[in-house]
Length: 114
Image (cartoon, rainbow, N blue to C red):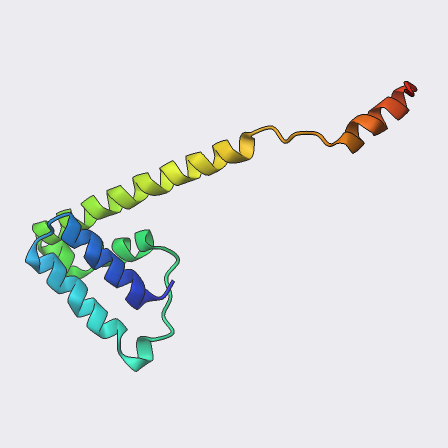
């Protein structure tokens, strides 16, 4: 995921959560840095990783409101990731129907020809 796009999504989610203006200013500041030509190839694995990186900044550690906004968003993203993984595992756990070929081969092995 491109860092600039991820930061835009994070800002949008923070706005939806009514984050403090200071938090949005921090994200804007980091977005300006990410827009520099030297930072263009930067990538992140997920939005969760970006939020964790933001919450580790000195500005976030020195301002409780910013830190709380970022931790709240991190919690939302974590719970969404857990729910997605659970749905995916449930989908993978569904039994796969057997093919006609399976039953035909089983009959042949057992010596029960029609």
